[in-house]
Image (cartoon, rainbow, N blue to C red; front, side, top):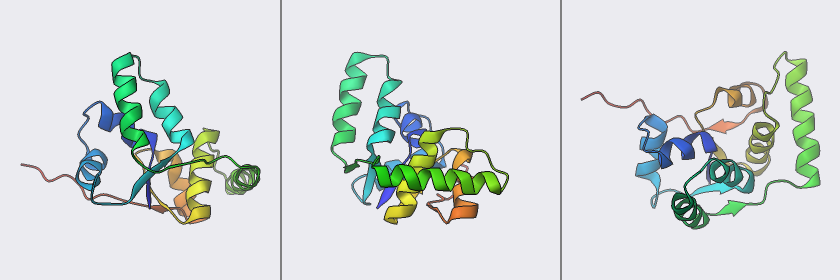
Length: 137
């Protein structure tokens, strides 16, 4: 399963073209794509237009949405945060720590466009999907 982070979904919903949104556009319907409840919250909270909110909510709910905040995951996320601090890395957003830990614990890949996940890949074994660069025409 490939978990798609809000950093990609937001660009995708606003028609931003980059290697991550291109990969997502090609993968929808062809790959096992999902998201967490926290990612859904992040994506939907920023939508100001009611019609776009409803359309986006319906589209996201067609995908597997994983409840991602158990007590066990909270403890493991705190441990991961502490491990990264010992490595000299400060995680700026706790929600990213929760998402990364969820993916690590459940063996999912993460598609993201957010440098905050790099430390989880480099130090904690987060599997990240790195889409190829866009071809220049």
